[in-house]
Image 1: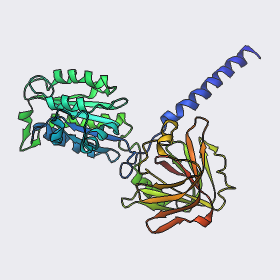
Image 2 (image 1 turned 60 degrees about the vertical axis):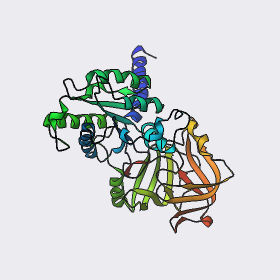
Image 3 (image 1 turned 180 degrees about the vertical axis):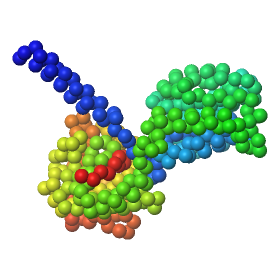
Length: 389
C-alpha cells in the first residue's frame, strides 16, 4: 500500500464513522404535542403563594408566548395551590397523591422548566424553598430558564443567583443567557395585565430560545396533527413510516385511524410490507412474513413510562413471553393476546413485540382478529415522519 493510498483510506474511514455516528443526532424529531404523554414538555413554576400576585400576571404573559408554539406541551405548577397538609410536621413521610401528581410529576416528566420568581426581602420566596425541599426529584438533563421580578431595581438578580445553586446541585442545566429580570414590576402592570412592551418582548424571546433548545422551534418540525393530514396524502401510495427509535415500516400505506383531535393512533399497510431498524430488515419482519399487509397501533401505552422499550426500562413493563398481555393505548386502542416473542437489537433494546391468539380493537371495532395469525408491533413512542418512496 502506497503512502498516498493509506492517507486516503484513513480519511475515508474517518468520514464514514463521523457521518455514521453524527447523523442520528441531527435527525429532526417530531413531537406529539396533541395526544402523547411522551411529548417534550415545558413546565412553568409560579413561585409564590400570594393570591392575585404580579408573579401570576407575568406568568400568564409568558404562557401566552409559549402557547404560540404548537409543538410545545405546557404544564403549570402554581405554588399558591399547594395542599395545606404539606405544612404538617410529618409531611416528608406522608406526601399526598395530590402533591405527587400535581407538584412532583410535572417536574419529573418535563424537559424544560421556567421558574417565575419574585424577590421577597432580598431572597426567593420561602414557599419556593419549602417546595424544593419537599420536591426531592432530580433535575438532571432538565433545561431551566429563570424569570425574576422585583418591586425595586435589578429584577431579583441576587435571589436568582442564589437559587441557581439549588438547581445545579439537583443536576439542572440553567440557561443563564436567556434569563429575564423585570425590575419595578408594579409600574409595568395595569389592571392585572403586563403592559410594558420591553418586558413582554423579553419574555417572548425567552420562550423562543427555550423552545429552540428543546428542538421545538416552530416551523422546524411538523406536529402529530399535521402527520394525520400527511397520512391522508400518502394513502394508497408506497411510503415509509419512521418511528422515533429508528424503526421504520415500508409498504403501501393503505389506511389509518385518527384520534378525536386528528392525531394518528393506528397505521395500516396493504400487500408486501417490511419492518426495518436503522435501514436493516428486522429478522422475521420481511415481505415474506407480511406479504398480505401489516397494521400497528401508535402512541403511548397506559402505565408504560417514556422509552419503555429501552433496556433499563423493559423490566418495569412486566412483559413476559408465554403470558397473556393487555396493552391499553392512550388513544383507546386495546391489544389483547398471548405474548409470543420479543425481538431485541444487539444493545438489548426491544424492537418488535409478537402476539398470538390476539385481538386488536378500537372501541367496538376490530382492527385485528385471532384467526388472522400472529400480530407484530414495531415498538416506539411516536411517529417521526411519513415519507413517500
